[in-house]
Image (cartoon, rainbow, N blue to C red):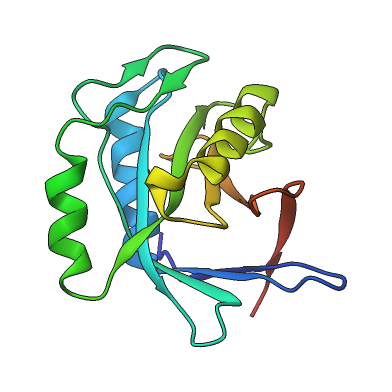
Length: 165
């Protein structure tokens, strides 16, 4: 199966676009296959357009070793992320958000997903005013789908819709 870049965009007054490179989706699918029936995830690394309306995601990390994962839960750890982000920052890439896997399930964000991302958006340590959340749901070996949401600091989440090109 050929994986292509994916673009997600908002509707309405506030305009956000997220472009996920095909190599990033391949990274996520590979990690999901390794995880089997358990959730997994990591952080998203990329850059922004000059007007900050578009996040271009070029990397999805593997699950940090200190993460907690189970059939219906995932709590991303932090081990190894600081030096990785420092190295990426030197090349003009930044933390732009989080990704995780709902094995056999929908890519719809859960209440825990919303709470976690709202907390990240409010935390100045992340230096990310509008973190992106990507969820891969379904079967990474067969039929899966992605969802994308943006969590502006101090505002409610914005669900993005896939733009079919």
